[in-house]
Amino acid sequence: MNELEQFKQTFFEECEELLQRFEEVAVTLVAGANDAEVLDDIFRTVHSIKAGAGAFKFQRLATYCHEFENYMDLVRGGKLLLIEGNPDLVVQAGDILQDLVAAARAGLEAQSGTD
Image (cartoon, rainbow, N blue to C red; front, top):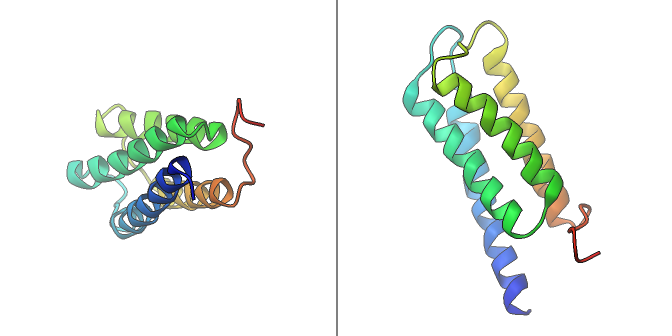
Protein backbone atom coordinates (compact mmCIF):
# COMPACT_ATOMS: atom_id res chain seq x y z
CA MET A 1 0.00 0.00 0.00
CA ASN A 2 1.47 3.35 -1.02
CA GLU A 3 1.59 6.35 1.28
CA LEU A 4 -1.51 8.03 -0.21
CA GLU A 5 -3.54 4.86 0.29
CA GLN A 6 -2.35 4.67 3.90
CA PHE A 7 -3.51 8.26 4.49
CA LYS A 8 -6.89 7.42 2.95
CA GLN A 9 -7.18 4.37 5.17
CA THR A 10 -6.49 6.54 8.21
CA PHE A 11 -9.07 9.07 7.01
CA PHE A 12 -11.76 6.40 6.70
CA GLU A 13 -10.89 4.97 10.13
CA GLU A 14 -11.25 8.45 11.60
CA CYS A 15 -14.56 8.84 9.75
CA GLU A 16 -15.84 5.68 11.42
CA GLU A 17 -14.99 7.09 14.85
CA LEU A 18 -16.47 10.49 14.02
CA LEU A 19 -19.68 8.99 12.67
CA GLN A 20 -20.07 6.80 15.72
CA ARG A 21 -19.73 9.87 17.92
CA PHE A 22 -22.17 11.72 15.65
CA GLU A 23 -24.79 9.01 16.21
CA GLU A 24 -24.28 9.13 19.97
CA VAL A 25 -24.81 12.87 20.23
CA ALA A 26 -27.35 13.46 17.43
CA VAL A 27 -29.97 11.31 19.14
CA THR A 28 -29.78 13.64 22.15
CA LEU A 29 -31.02 16.65 20.16
CA VAL A 30 -34.29 18.05 21.44
CA ALA A 31 -36.78 20.20 19.52
CA GLY A 32 -36.84 23.76 20.84
CA ALA A 33 -33.42 23.52 22.46
CA ASN A 34 -30.12 24.42 20.85
CA ASP A 35 -27.68 22.59 23.12
CA ALA A 36 -24.39 24.31 22.28
CA GLU A 37 -22.19 21.38 23.28
CA VAL A 38 -24.11 18.86 21.17
CA LEU A 39 -24.33 21.24 18.20
CA ASP A 40 -20.61 22.00 18.39
CA ASP A 41 -19.83 18.28 18.49
CA ILE A 42 -21.94 17.60 15.41
CA PHE A 43 -20.45 20.59 13.60
CA ARG A 44 -16.89 19.46 14.35
CA THR A 45 -17.65 15.98 13.06
CA VAL A 46 -19.00 17.27 9.77
CA HIS A 47 -16.17 19.81 9.47
CA SER A 48 -13.51 17.15 10.06
CA ILE A 49 -14.97 14.82 7.46
CA LYS A 50 -15.26 17.72 5.00
CA ALA A 51 -11.59 18.58 5.41
CA GLY A 52 -10.46 15.05 4.67
CA ALA A 53 -12.92 14.65 1.80
CA GLY A 54 -11.57 17.83 0.25
CA ALA A 55 -7.97 16.72 0.68
CA PHE A 56 -8.70 13.44 -1.12
CA LYS A 57 -10.95 15.11 -3.71
CA PHE A 58 -14.12 13.27 -2.76
CA GLN A 59 -16.21 16.08 -4.23
CA ARG A 60 -19.70 14.73 -3.51
CA LEU A 61 -18.79 14.06 0.10
CA ALA A 62 -17.07 17.44 0.53
CA THR A 63 -20.00 19.32 -1.03
CA TYR A 64 -22.54 17.53 1.14
CA CYS A 65 -20.48 18.23 4.25
CA HIS A 66 -20.20 21.88 3.27
CA GLU A 67 -23.99 22.24 3.02
CA PHE A 68 -24.56 20.28 6.23
CA GLU A 69 -21.94 22.40 7.97
CA ASN A 70 -23.68 25.60 6.80
CA TYR A 71 -26.98 24.38 8.25
CA MET A 72 -25.37 23.43 11.54
CA ASP A 73 -23.61 26.80 11.69
CA LEU A 74 -26.98 28.56 11.41
CA VAL A 75 -28.37 26.41 14.21
CA ARG A 76 -25.28 26.94 16.39
CA GLY A 77 -25.45 30.68 15.80
CA GLY A 78 -29.08 30.81 16.92
CA LYS A 79 -30.37 31.85 13.49
CA LEU A 80 -32.32 28.59 13.29
CA LEU A 81 -33.96 26.83 16.19
CA LEU A 82 -34.42 23.10 16.16
CA ILE A 83 -38.17 22.71 16.00
CA GLU A 84 -40.41 19.67 15.71
CA GLY A 85 -38.88 17.24 13.22
CA ASN A 86 -35.52 19.01 12.87
CA PRO A 87 -33.65 16.77 15.33
CA ASP A 88 -34.78 13.78 13.27
CA LEU A 89 -33.66 15.61 10.15
CA VAL A 90 -30.16 15.99 11.62
CA VAL A 91 -30.05 12.27 12.41
CA GLN A 92 -31.18 11.47 8.85
CA ALA A 93 -28.57 13.85 7.45
CA GLY A 94 -26.00 11.90 9.46
CA ASP A 95 -27.22 8.68 7.84
CA ILE A 96 -26.69 10.22 4.41
CA LEU A 97 -23.25 11.38 5.49
CA GLN A 98 -22.43 7.82 6.55
CA ASP A 99 -23.62 6.51 3.16
CA LEU A 100 -21.46 9.05 1.30
CA VAL A 101 -18.40 8.10 3.36
CA ALA A 102 -19.06 4.43 2.58
CA ALA A 103 -19.42 5.21 -1.14
CA ALA A 104 -16.14 7.12 -1.16
CA ARG A 105 -14.42 4.30 0.68
CA ALA A 106 -15.76 1.75 -1.79
CA GLY A 107 -14.48 3.84 -4.70
CA LEU A 108 -17.97 4.64 -5.95
CA GLU A 109 -17.21 8.35 -5.97
CA ALA A 110 -14.78 9.38 -8.66
CA GLN A 111 -11.91 11.48 -7.43
CA SER A 112 -11.73 14.62 -9.54
CA GLY A 113 -8.48 15.05 -11.37
CA THR A 114 -7.51 11.38 -11.06
CA ASP A 115 -10.24 9.70 -13.10
